[in-house]
Length: 389
Image 1 (tube, one colour):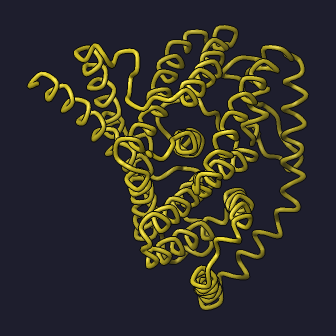
Image 2: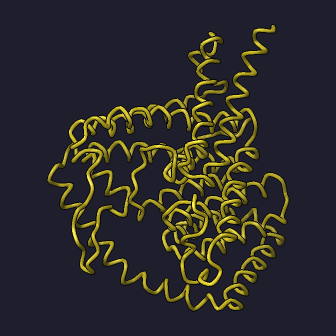
Image 3: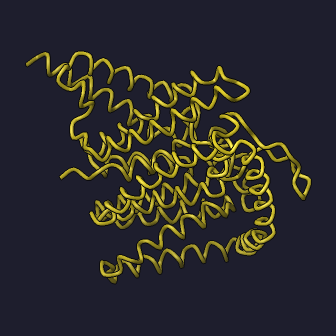
């Protein structure tokens, strides 16, 4: 009995290390000391599995067949792109990519473990707290003289370097905040969601904003569950945002940025056309993991990224890589459909947001803990995690 107690303590300590890592990941992106918490979680869980023989095959309790299938599809996708290093210009990167493949499998599994052994609420408190702290630090440290024009650049030094990713973090924080409100009934947290939305507006990032707004349309299908208080909170939220835009004069700056989207869209289409043309030269297996674009676009910019993870997948992995990604996305959508019918619509919204976000964001999703973990793998892990009965 004492032996089991010690083993369970090791597993709990692994879970706590992981939860601290998850809460700090948005605030200290790609900081080694934070990543050490993740490594500690892996080592402790591995030690637990070694001494707890009956759990070696199950890995975690409540390890269901849907998650098992998902982990297989994730493994196929990640292993294929790890292998693609072998026909790239840097085949030695295979070992690094393979290591990160194992990390990501553990990451997705641990999110499900937190939901099943703690709660949905615990998970989203961790996500929301990290994103909200990031917002506060950014607003405190950014140059106040240019806060309405510099897109929150040069704010908190450890935040994502790209303000598009920063906007994505704020959007994820908003959805997690709404899930907390759903689970607890603490409606005063709408104020925190409004602050995150204002932070998203200040980044002037069109991609995350549009992805969030379109994904939120899924909530309209639940109109039968809408009460008068929801309408009141929505109107008050819109009123606060409107007053912010008017009183600060930010409305005109933001409108000007949004109207530039029409011109920018043609530039983006040019990048995608170039990426598609280049990818067709290695149609089946792609150019390999480290392939980047190298051309100057119509406005004189030197372009290296595809500005879409889907075109990046085709460029690096060819049609085989695309099929692996499609299989993974279809599994994610099937889980979103199930969550939608389990009164967990916001979890489905989070996953739809992720898919839309990466339409215009070109960073690849296999790598060390960083933006892709928050914006691609976390939404997938969340939508795959079932609420404990």
